[in-house]
Image 1 (cartoon, one colour):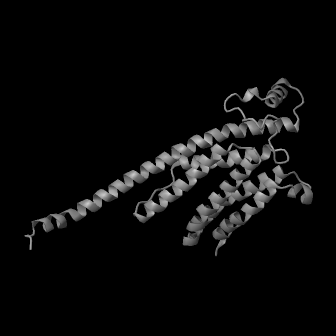
Image 2: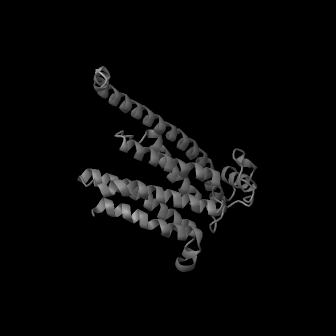
Image 3: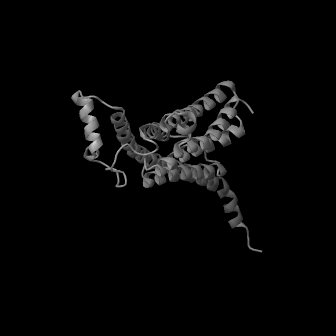
Length: 246
């Protein structure tokens, strides 16, 4: 047990606490602080440990099998718990969360299968970009919530996928922002919510794109390994075919 692994375990232990903060009035009743402020601080703090545990492990030469096993589990637990909590609070659509979480499980299974076959699939640039966009998106949606709910009154109906300006609260917030009027705290939350919902589309697209890249890498690596094994075993097969039947 070293410092990087301790940070990874800390990230895992923060997951149930984050869910409690996001789905219950715990922070308002016991701390007197709005849940969206406590939630976004906890989520970003947990996400930052993902960078530091890997950086410290590599710089100190403390990379362990335990860390390699726990780190991806901690990442997926954190993101999955945050996204499912957003669905429960009607801050994110379920279909988008299903795609994102499904992609995580698919890629994890693919990389495990590739490791069994001796094929190493390294993280792609699109995958790293998706992770960063994912963290920003979740943070924006948490920060924009009001008592765990969206800051717009039309949720109950689907939030417009493209025509964001059709939301009355957004038009009002935008007029206050660019028209020089008084911009209220609710206006900023509406703007953050709109930015988060727009970023969610970017996360879904990058998730699908990076998943395709991982599957392509697996197919090329698996095909190369299969061809190599076939070439190496071919002479013995030819020799066996030349043996006279008994």
